[in-house]
Image (cartoon, rainbow, N blue to C red; front, side):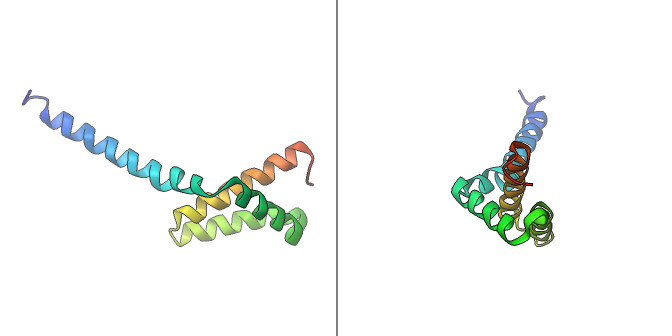
Length: 92
C-alpha cells in the first residue's frame, strides 16, 4: 500500500484540479437560464444585426480578460445560440 501512496495522492490531486476546472469553466455558466441566453441573443440581433455574433464574441473576450468565467461562459452560450439560429435560417 505504501508503495502506491504517492501515486494515489497525485491521482487525487489531478482529479481535484480537473473537478475545479469543470466547475469554474462549464458548470457555473450552465446555471444561467436558457431564457436569459435566448433573450440576450434576441437583444444582440436587434441591436447589432449581422454583427451580433461578433459583438457577443467581444463580450466573451472582455469577460475572459476580466477573469470572469461565468460571464465568459454566458457569452459563449449566446454565441452558440446565435450560430444555431444562423444555421437554422432564423437569422442572417
